[in-house]
Length: 191
Image (cartoon, rainbow, N blue to C red):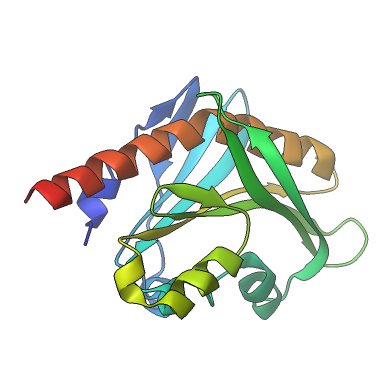
């Protein structure tokens, strides 16, 4: 399995976005039951997005921890979930799901979450692919990952702008994430 240190090799600078590691609460780390993770914020010109990358070998551990379950469990209301295909900076298409959650009523907080999974190097927009992998059995997969890019909004930030920012960041970050997994998995295979 990959380690937190290997995932930490994800660049701190992605395009013009500057990253900072953000420690996760130990209770959350234990609840997600991932083998390794990276949790950061990236900023550019006054805009900030969060990045969470979780890695695991067991489909049963990653599948339950998805935005449409965990955010409502923390008091957020799901307002919209839309599957989209975003262009990645390497020219590939990136299928993902864009979620919008809110809490606190009119003028309250809103968060946009761009979420996708990577199953043996192949991106997929929802947990369905992970369930199919689990159904086939663990021997059928070498690794699974979940990627989330988040942007919180308030009364001053339009959720459409937040969604645009998350997409702009993911456009640049997705190839870096894919390359990191390819390199790490290759090193694991060689050892």
